[in-house]
Amino acid sequence: MDRNQKAEVVSALNAELAEVGVVVVTRNLGMTVAQSTVLRQKMRDAGASYKVTKNRLARIALDGTDYTALSDMLTGPVGLATSVDPVAAAKVAIDFAKTNDKLEIVGGAMGEVLLDAEGVKALASMPSLDELRAKLVGLIVAPATKLATVTQAPAAQLARVFNAYAEKEAA
Image 1: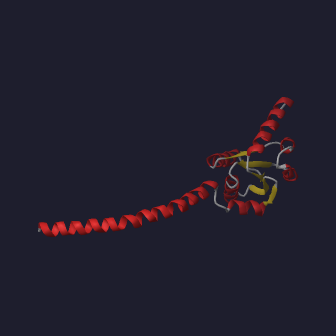
Image 2: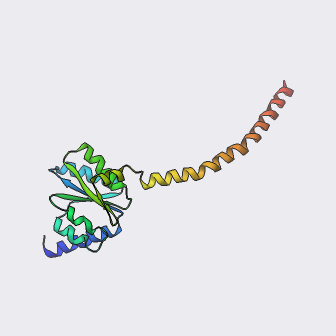
Image 3: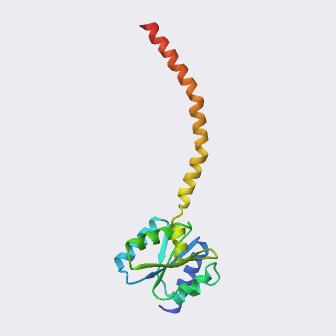
């Protein structure tokens, strides 16, 4: 890579880090290309991304973001999993690490809050943003549904009574 390409990589990574809600640092211990491709696909499906960059370029990109504390974790062959949803990247990385022993969770950060490997695991066990939204909508809709059911019940009973009288008269 020449200087211009390195500058483009740094600026793109810096722009991405300014927008994300969480960064998970992983260590790649001899993952194959096929395994990396599977991990990247799972990340994309969850709305996250996974990048392997040179540690020096990643440190430069971390400057000026909330994630500057991560620079101490960038040693050896590492990859950065990022997502806007604070849970998505952590959840995919933890799930993939359970099935693949060549991926190790080093730590991460959520904004300025630095997380160790256990913190990332705890973050991954939380429900995602979409799941929380669904639960919230369910809680909001539940009283209205119950109210509609309760108000509809007497009318339905009256209709059944009238129907029974009509059938009795017809018989």
